[in-house]
Length: 241
Image (cartoon, rainbow, N blue to C red; front, side, top):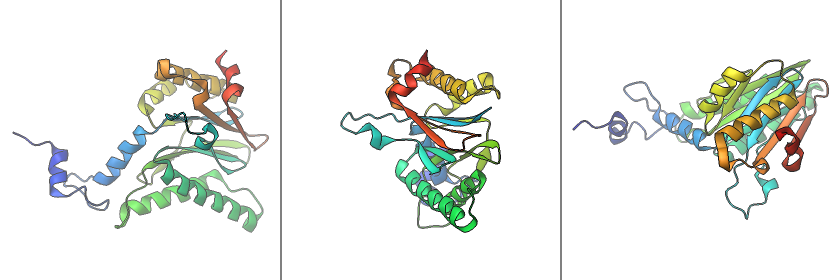
């Protein structure tokens, strides 16, 4: 009887350390971390004609949790917003480091930091934990949007420490299904309001009977204002009409 390759690797210890390559060239602990990200609740980000928006599913399963404490929209600086999927405790550390970097930039240079500098720092820290022993990889993907010099940006960093710029992207649960919809229906000339409606429509299709407007947090930054605006709960109901 043939033993599956993954079980062979586990038996031989290739998944015991994040720094150990399997014979096929895989870092198995990193790949396990990627699976963790897909268990997390989804977030959708879009670069719109007037700014950037992120719509995040909080997916609170315990009624005893206070909803405002389970926020999935993080403010890096007043012009940069982020969300995460995976182990949110890992995300918290990366977000706090990003917030410190943004404030240091304002103090040192008297100007807001560029979004790419923030995502590069996050990606560098993630990559470091795939290269050195003694610690596991960060089990989280970060979706980061911001505006700088009259233009909107959206970046995604995966668990490997890689990052790319996107017009629109999704992380977390059902990410590939959501990306397929984005590839076919997303348009660059969408406004932020149209983007929110579009994202909620996607969530409604994906979640079906589990869809509840109270599950979602929205954060957007307009190019003209360069200020983060948050929406949740009743303020999102108008986008379902």
